Image 1: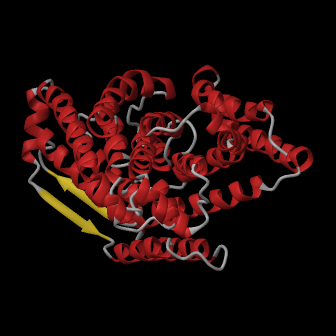
Image 2: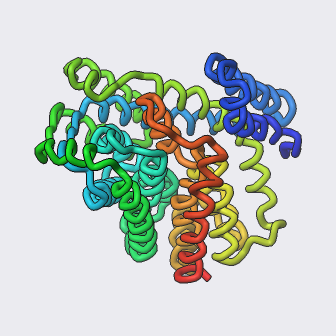
Length: 419
């Protein structure tokens, strides 16, 4: 049975709660956000079980289990790696750090790169860090950087699991990735240069006195990080992958010296916040995605440009991984092809390359539009806020940063490569 439009209301209420309640009712939200998320998720679950008689909700819970297991493992393991960069935090050095994060995101995922670098990034800029430092970190390391490989970002990994060859993506999106990455790094450099020049001379002198030095501790956690990444490719039996991830995280937590956790300001608050909020998001967005899948053809979405913009905007508000899969399924369905048939997938990417490329880069890039567009976004925000770093609100993030900076960039990408 097809879900009704009213079934989307819990998802809308949850998005509004995340955006508004921390400001109009901060104490209530801080004490009860998990109950709000669970309550709205419970409403959707009951609706599916008793009204639609469908089991789509179980698939959403399975995806959530994979999602939160990976994020938890990467969060805990990377929390056991201490990277400290001492010396003058110049705009150029920040650009190099962000560029490095964008590059390694393709090998350890945007989540892995974000969790590995956000703490040293905050520390090295602690004397002059502002909200734009955090926002551009989310733009580059947590999203755009991971567009080259299936490991880089969850949407591309789902495509790989459906049969898109591992190296197909990098060959098709390299110049699109490089254009977006360079554009964001240039804009960041301008912002950071202005910020750097506004600092008092005594502050700059204090930074200069700190000798240039990079300190690394907990190196063995890189090996455990590799185990977590490798386990992503395990598909059977069900939940073996998640068991390996969480076991690896437990081993890392027990092996890591308390001094490393203390110097990293490590605690479980950020991952707990993400876990509670995203279980509600994954469950309540199920009817919205189902309605999109069933009616995308009625919307007249057929061209690569349409898939780029529709997939993109919805990826900013619905988690980008299931949004990617929904539009890829719909695009293949227009031509009578089945996404669960490997031969159909290979035929589609050969005959309709531009459709797949448009859906792929928009899902990855537009994940940066909001805090909930991609899993690492909210974790980075939570870690920064927990370390008393100024972070913009849900709407402030969009109005001050993502809309004026990212939308012109996406229009440029569309004009150069999609239109």
